[in-house]
Image (spheres, rainbow, N blue to C red):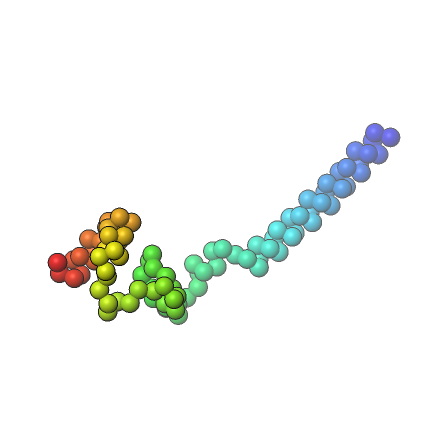
Length: 91
């Protein structure tokens, strides 16, 4: 009797593991987190790292200078970026 259960457990585990593996393979084929890295980079819109996407409602306009509060936040959160911002303004 014990031998029968051992074979049943093996068949059940083989079936379960195989089905789980196949479903994970299917999921990975549908959702590949690295697929964006292999896309053609010339077709994607250019954007600076760290900012919202081009059509995002919270995007900061480039032609409007930052307010004092925004400059303070920029200094606190991104010190290296603040130095770059100061150099581009010439101050």
